[in-house]
Amino acid sequence: MSGANGAAGGGGGAEAQRAGAGRDEVGAGGPRLVLASGSAARRAMLQNAGLTFDVVPASIDETAVRQALQADDIVPCDIAEVLAIAKAEQVSARQPGAMVIGGDQILEHNGVVFEKPATMEVARDHLLSLRGHVHELHSSVALVQDGQTLWSHTDSAALTMRDVSPAFIGRYLSRVGDAALTSVGAYQIEGLGVQLFERIAGQHFTIMGMPLLPLLAELRQRGMIER
Image (cartoon, rainbow, N blue to C red; front, side, top):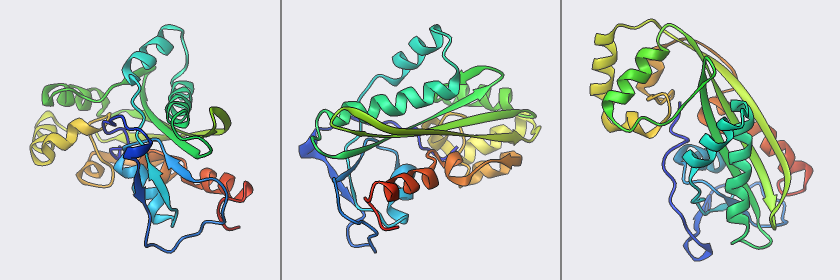
């Protein structure tokens, strides 16, 4: 995937980073936009779409939340939505009046949810498990204002990994290095990771970590960007 699940640190309102300033803006007024994510991929998607927003990463224990939801037999696509909302809600509590965008992405293979690999050995094991099979990426986005969830959307993509050899996986990991540890699945589809795949079915933005087109449509509907 794209690295959309890169580690996100905490931050209060004073630590908000402005993004999109100086670009051709498409804003139409209304509440200030805040992205509750430290993901470079999500930030780039919004910037490239011409939005101006602050970046205030959420600081929730995603692993603990994910494991609790799995223990309650919550399906992976719903886990992504719950996490997207939880991130936005946490940041919303520190950003009164702002329209906060939360996002999350889950990789599912045969009912198993994959975490980001902690080591290169784990990354190799993940790729060996995924090779020759189809796995799904579930990406969710949510809008929260003053603690109230106004809207959320989840989309899924199916990716078929080539039946590559263990030697190919070893060479791939050697080339990408620690970047393999920044994403679940141990790949970035926009880089060398694309060499691992033979078929991809789904929206580009969903694979990158956020259903961007539905988000933009909702922001237009709410008068926050130009129609």
